[in-house]
Image 1 (cartoon, rainbow, N blue to C red):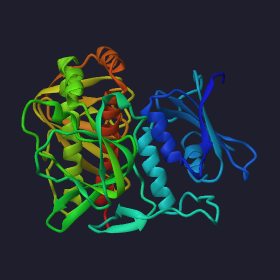
Image 2: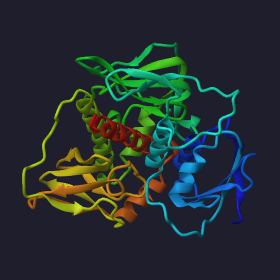
Image 3: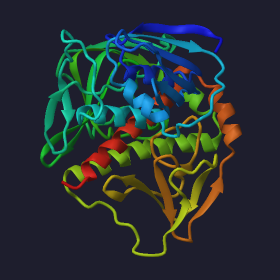
Length: 393
């Protein structure tokens, strides 16, 4: 393909997981080429609007090729931005692929070609119980930071609490340097949920609304951290120029992250959580559906059902003013790619105008788009965490 090389470097310093986040966070279209000394042919991954659509690695194609490429840790890469004209054979979202690949590496399914002198720095990572384990943990990262929205910078030393669960505050930060840990308080003590790195945001769209807002999780520094305090007045001005339905979707995204996190905590504590109605449920959107449609619930309740190796389990309840379906700029590793939507026949919805919403999204600032991408990535991670805790021991 023809195009311009916009990113190049070494896998020792930028992992394939990080590259997926960089390319995805910027909604880039193009070809990622990976070269290593141990393999004669380069590995190729094609991206469209930040999501992988096809790949090759030796005799492997598609998703199998991508998983194999996650084993390469000693080589060079370059990303060429430009039009992609290959068949789309990969349907999974980028974050689901990343998290599945990292789990396969942990399980020994994917072998890493890491040099002997390379070691990963261990930090805390949730395990299958309530504790933590030491390993090279996955850190969520965001797109390039737009300094135009930053009012001030703040420093936090290792272990310092940045946000306390249950307290009130409307500040929103972007991570400029370092890593923070997000955790939930439980009867058994704090449960680590995820780690956020450079380009990620602390705070949600609910912070932009004119009412009290209680923090739903605690955030603390892992090592020294530098944060950029965002101009919430400027962000609120941008928020209120959006169509009503778009603003409602952002509020629904906030609820999704909160409820998916709470679901993961319930499963970690062996709590049953909500129950599906015993009968009368019908499939509204099947898992894997290719339909580009989305809806707002006006009456009734819908449920997200997640498919796992142990069968299906109920992930979330969706209620009035929540949205569901396929929204091209909101890939959260849930429906329709990785979950089904079911409901009773009393569910009432209103169809969303996706082209109109996409036009509004395209006109947003880099910072606002980054916040949307970040919350979708966090939903992806907590969804996989809930699935992990749901598995039978």
